[in-house]
Length: 257
Image 1 (tube, one colour):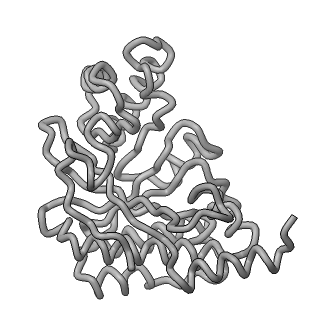
Image 2: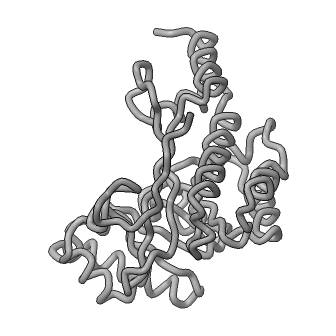
C-alpha cells in the first residue's frame, strides 16, 4: 500500500503536468436542439488510477481535492471557450465537488477569474453538485452556493436519488436543475418502480420551478417514457457519446496539451 505522501505526490504530479483530458456530452431539449454540454474530465495516463472517480477519491484522502477540482474546472472553461460553446447559445455544465468548495484551501473568486479570463458568461455556467458526496458542513456549503448564485451562476444537483443528502440537499440547495440518476431512467419504460419514482420527482420539481434532466438515456423507449412524464431535458449515449460521436452535434474539441 502506498503511503500518504507517495499518493499525494502522485496527484501533485498529475496536477502539475495537467495530465487530464476534457470531453463534452450534450444535453438536449425535446426538439433535439442542444441546451448545453457537460464537461467530463478524464485521465491521459491511468496507470495508477483506473478512472477519474478513483483519482478524486484518492485526492480527497490526501487533501488534494480542491486543487484537482479547480484544475478540472479551469480546463473545462478553457476548452469550452476555445470551442465557442456558449457562443452557440449553449450552457456549460461544470461538475464541482462539495468537498472542494468546503475545503479550507478553497478561495472564493477562482471560478469568477477563469470565467472572465476565457469570456464565458456566468449566466451560462451551471454548477453541478453531485448528490453522492457527503456534505459535512451544510451551513458553509449553503453559504458558498449562495455566493455563486449571487454572481449569476445556476446550480444543479447531479445523480439525484442515489446519494447521501436526498431531499435534505434539495431543500438546502434549492437548485435550478435536478439531474435524475440513470439508475432510475434505465428501463423506466419497463420498471414500474422507476417510473413511479421519477414521476414523483418531476411533480415535486414542477411545484418548485426546478427543471429536470433525465440522465443515462440509452434507448428510444426510455426517452419516450421520460417525455410522457413531462421531462424536457435529456442526456445519454442514445444521442451520441461525446464531441466525437456522429449522432451528437457537439463542437469539435481538441485534447488538452
